[in-house]
Length: 115
Image (tube, rainbow, N blue to C red; front, side, top):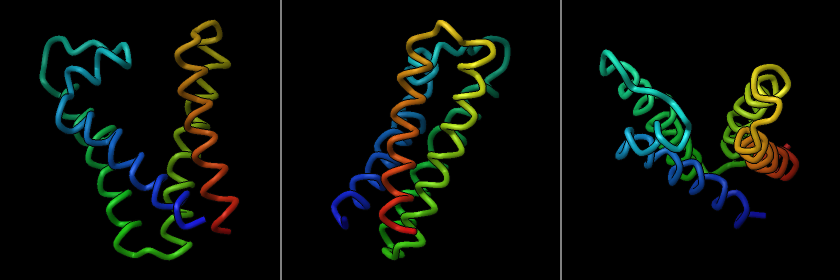
């Protein structure tokens, strides 16, 4: 179980690192446009990037079940938001459904083994 916790934290750090270090690449992968101002890149670095980096690092430092459960809750929150999007504006978008599935699996695993 500890291995799954560490893997979940490292996934958060890894995906977050892309958002932080390569916001234009991340925007492209997520089909986001960055036109006009640079606030879109700032938002990607913050919310898609360092938020998840900090979450994963915090869980590794604290190392307890509640810390890893919080990582699960964060991924679960992302999954809920993605599911709403999949059911409304992205019904036929395969990529959105795949992202939802990944987010939901990480959330369920981390919550199931830590609560």
